[in-house]
Length: 401
Ligand SMILES: *Cc1c(COP(=O)(O)O)cnc(C)c1O
Figure 1 (cartoon, rainbow, N blue to C red):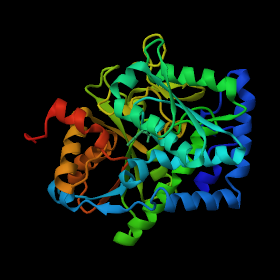
Figure 2 (figure 1 turned 30 degrees about the vertical axis):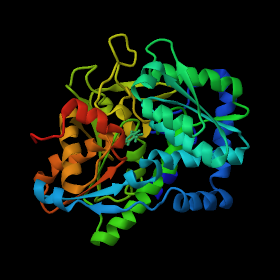
Figure 3 (figure 1 turned 135 degrees about the vertical axis):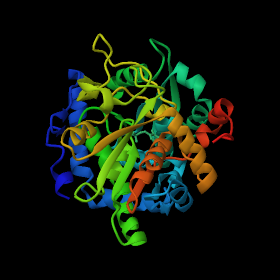
Figure 4 (figure 1 turned 120 degrees about the horizontal axis):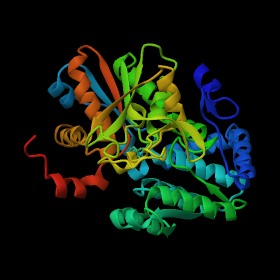
């Protein structure tokens, strides 16, 4: 536990990355969240209620499955998957949203608020708000609202107020700006719930801690299943929360190599991928220091990937730190590899993965033949129901694979 205890430092720095660069009016509110989290998250009442929720509402623990057919087809390493697709709402995001919702309840807040891109974080947060009897305000760009209609319907059914954002690019970045603006006016009664291990301190630490359950369960389950630890552990990285959840369970195990898999999109040209660690440089984004994909003006660059949940020109500060310190390796899978993995896992294992998670599957399929005798544990961060219409309408049923 030594790494997790000592990282980040008290100012929220993972090595040189992280911190909190806030507009002055927000400073007292983030201080309140920091202090509340430090105090409340260690209390026995909080811990036991969260444990109860994990088991009786979320359906945890989620299993680790041996992907026998896929392993045999690839040849080489044995491939296993931690099944966050079986977590309630179908992805890992509910792990931190239930934690953030419970924190809001303990703090006496009456509302949860957030921005959302594809709507996955919005749906998970709206679920938490419904469970805790809190109001929920979700800011979403108009372009995304049109593209992600089923998630907008879900959020509304769950009782959330979806605020359309109609300025600028009308997408995720504007939704963040809009949400921050609205939060400033109601921070006394609302909690801003960030959707990944990004944002100003304490969010990268807090979201990691709430996702830690993935790694703790996976380590124990893998040992039980195989009698050993995995040689390689891999997860897709957008902001990096599902990866930090899995990594954090193995971070003190010297013999386990950690791999983050970034989206290479359609090419390595700026604007056509979202592989921040692979191609980015140090910079500041949304109130913290990390690695960023920048355009010629030094602004966050446009990004592309077939998996909208990985669509971010920055990355959680802890990943930048793990990369620079050599504690984790980072690799990338492109749209085509992710789609092939999507079809392969569906057809050969009976699991339709989220396109985000398919990047981790693609990594395992590429690495397995090169690593005979080894084992690879990937995080299946979510299920692919949300992606089936898009995939089949655009690419068919994978007949020619
Ligand atoms: C949002 C999402 C991701 C990406 O978020 P991280 O913070 O990088 O984990 C990955 N997989 C699924 C299924 C998602 O919904």
